[in-house]
Amino acid sequence: MRKHNLAFIDIESTGLNVMKHEIIEIGCVITTPKLKIIEKFELKIRPEHIEDADPVALKIIHYDSLNLVSAYTLENAIKILSKKVKDCIMIGQNVSFDSGFLEHAFAKTKLKNSMHYHKLDTISIAWAKLHKKKSITHFSLREMCKYFGIENKNPHNALSDAYATYELYKKLMKL
Image: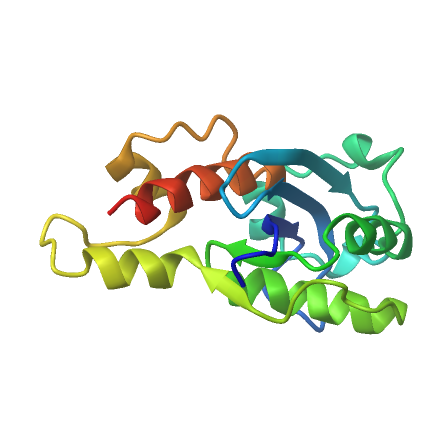
């Protein structure tokens, strides 16, 4: 695992149900194993069934259809992602949520997930390193950023959250 680049990935979706809701944004920060940034990118995806979206989710992510006028189709976005993250280890804040949506997207588009099969979750790492601290009651990205003094300039924006996760991971690895 030490030789693989890392892909800090965050997705924004139209809800929490992987079978019903859609990815509308993918943010990614790719680094070397030593955490030097290679590339940062964001993929906006045009939803096919916005009528199925959870209104609360759309409010949280500040959904605006005008921002998606020139967005990718899911298939094109997943092709781009797959090419860029080849052999990377995925790291996410609650990685199972993001990877679940991505696995569904890979299956739906019949494209191969080119990432390494290992995944790392910053919530699990934070819990392992900080669970004895009584001052920490939540391990959300917002709370972890507050605890470590990490500025997340645009929460619930995929690239901003992916970058905050990268910064959090660096802090956690120093503990």
